[in-house]
Length: 192
Image (tube, rainbow, N blue to C red; front, side):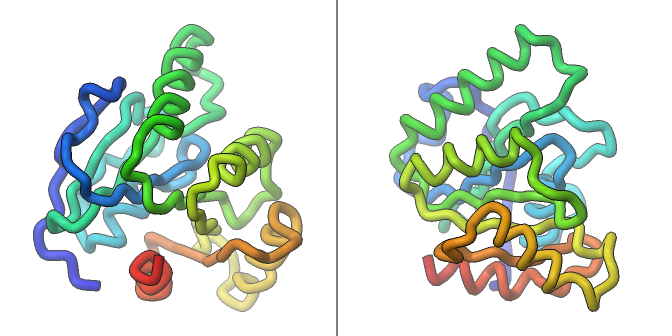
């Protein structure tokens, strides 16, 4: 897919701040520093549409990126960032849960996990929450550039066996560095 005019639209922490239209929303969920912002930049072929940082926990609001007035990429704050105060974690957790339960425009949840590591307890909790929400979901095994290209498929299969032994959800590798998996992800997004 060729994206011509992606733009950051709004940051939100409550429903009254969400975009007031019926465009589908593709929601990015994952732990802090798993690469949600880099995923957006790679998919839309822009270097700095979504702000990235090597420091986890930078995204503290729900960021809506309008993709050619066709849909939104919605970047949720990451979970599991231990340097965020408990009070801040609770506040962020509440508005994420409110968004996931109240938004009527969610068309797909993309759950990003790190291809190099077994899912954490927080990853497993989030995965179960997503499944229980009954929203369509795909899982992106991100940072595939950090392992040998010959080991990517086995790593994705291992993660799927751990999280989704029924294999009824699509798991795909991804790398913002290599940029070789984007088309396959676009194909899955467009089909859904």
